[in-house]
Image (cartoon, rainbow, N blue to C red; front, side, top):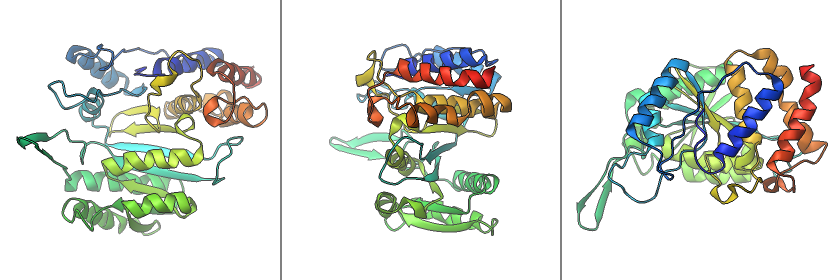
Length: 335
């Protein structure tokens, strides 16, 4: 468990409370790692990586990166992804009962490559006042994420994959990504494939999100679209997410926002982190716990029937209120 920054520690406490009430047989090895709080060191990162490799599964909050440059350009968040080769980020945005939005009954997925692209930390000032920032796109990683997306669509009964790009301007970099997606799509004739320029995709998501099923993106575009689609279903507080390598899985909220202004105020929405924890249990094959004790309906119940909602989704309830309601309505399933 990596609580992270902002409200991360408070949300992890919510997970612990629910797991304790459900008697979930999971013990957490907790690691405090924060650049903004000064608790991140190379030795702590190495110990964290050792434990993650041993356990193969982790749950984490957002590790916030400071804006100012302090020597190393690569943040601990990015270094963790690269060391674990967490190349695929998956964010499923699904409408929740009781969470009213402009577009109801949404269910779409953003799959993002997150180990290269614009987030390569390869920047330098060539001459005074001129900064060059390199965007790295490789055939191997583009093919890998494309295959992951089509495999995901096949396993989860999805019918279409849309590659999001800017190949009309970045003809070589995004052109290579798009070419790899097109090549991989030919291996999956049952999955419809199309492509869309990223700026048009943002507009189409707001105008008519129902036209999309699985969105396949490079690093930066996926980061942006994760937050766009999260906003469509209620915001950062209700969308779970996960990141995968060939060997490891890290579960984290879909929209990575530390919500620092809410720290200590007991107002953060724990839904996204609790859904993330439920998905982790499903991954760990605790199927009965996932389907009974932590069934998604447990979270819909406070929202839709009891009107227990935090401020971000139009209510006045506290984090503690919401978690306690989840626990109270989980007990019949437990016993």
